[in-house]
Image: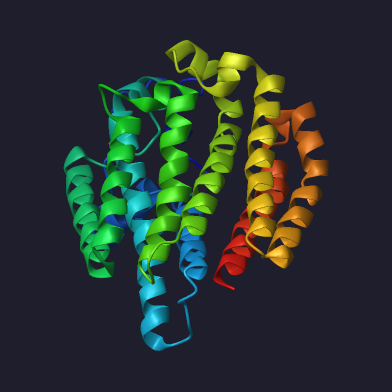
Length: 313
């Protein structure tokens, strides 16, 4: 699970760049660069949350219409809207990247600003069109998500400058709103589904911090007050683990309270299995990020689906 902050990290400047790299021509080259600019690695989390919301509605089935609707929704939440947020973020960071990461697509000239403008318009039109097709309530959540994405990257708010604000904007967009949109696309929202979506948004806030450990030096220089910058590596790692754990404990408690003991037990077992990677991550977060993503966060993600299945039952 990745957030928008990837472009805020700073790497040592490369040797002097005297000339922008000329973009390769042809439709294939344009599509390839668009694809890279949209950062496919970030698409999974919102698409998965949309799927979980759809499952939680209890209305998902194996008919062609329902499966088609699900695929359309995950395409909207993942590649289209998340891709759009990544394009906007890179555009807003282009001046800083020109100094610190000149090899990136926009500052290197591999992607022109005209390309960015056209891609932004196309993705916005596609995302809004699909959202409207899926229903007015889905369109509402998409609209709120777009506002969050713009608030994260663009001035004057530029929420990414503070870890608490930026992580909240991303967590709500990537998890909570995507879950709610998935549920609303198939049925009327329920209180339990909203509550679980918000709890997993809380957990996602902690997950967003995991991406910040690799850019502590650069963030400090640029005045970006990420959680690791504000509290140091060890305390920030503890906050990650605590936030994820509290969110999952809340889900477990609610599932048992609502009469879904099997789902609650499954989420509990997945939480217990996170204890080993949690300890390892706290000891050395900077060098255990990949391991933590592949273990603890993956278990967290499977817990989302287990909770959704419990709500659907």
